[in-house]
Image 1: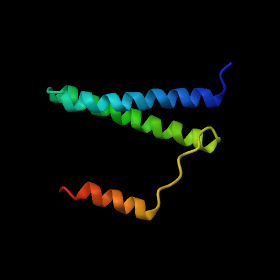
Image 2: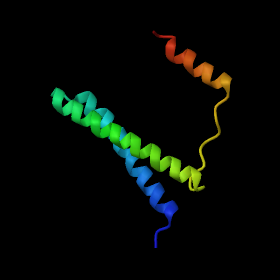
Image 3: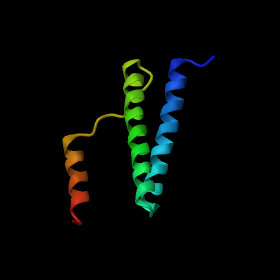
Length: 84
């Protein structure tokens, strides 16, 4: 019998995989109606992902990585904006 933790993690894995897929489909979509439909589907999956993530976190089913330091955040920001 599956436990809540297993169900939440399986669902999160599926949502995360679909979110990665949408990025490619959206960027390749030439038809604007199809593109908007894909964006709407992605947005729905992002919302569901956040809900399931919050549930898993609150119930101790997920432990996030250690938070980045302010210095690490600034370094990444600098690297990402250096070429702009």
